[in-house]
Image (cartoon, rainbow, N blue to C red; front, side, top):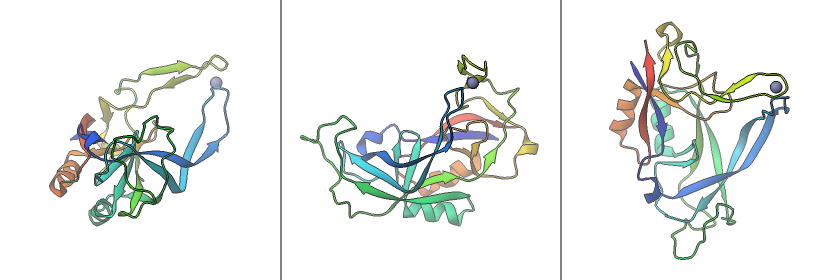
Length: 205
Ligand SMILES: [Zn+2]
């Protein structure tokens, strides 16, 4: 079965975009490799950024998806295991580097539909021997290789898959990337959510 990575659609500029400004919490102290592991704790604080004031079913801050109630209900009703953290919007402060001049911007204070930061709960273990890894860097002190998050040609042995429809990977600790099965992709497509697309990312074999 093919798996897909979910991300913002090619037409994401038609939709309001946001940037997450808090609440990040460091969950693991700095190691010699210079790695920080941080996690967002509720509520997620975000700012709408200038460009569009059309709200999509999904909005993205980089790889982090935020979704509306319609998506939340869909995921819950279809047995997709996810957590939903409420999002609070603060006023745009210009840090995203865009001028408000002549660009539509979602009104502040935000009174629109609720958004949630959605995160897949299930963590799958890929076959790392059969999945190409791309070196990010080697630690100058301990020599440990640090790899980029796996996003393509991912090989999952079917014995390590128990029917999860939406998931992340244990080997991508810092990564927010979320993946769906072919079957889950069809359900998403039938629901016709705006501002989401599916990129082929590997196989369950
Ligand atoms: Zn190190």
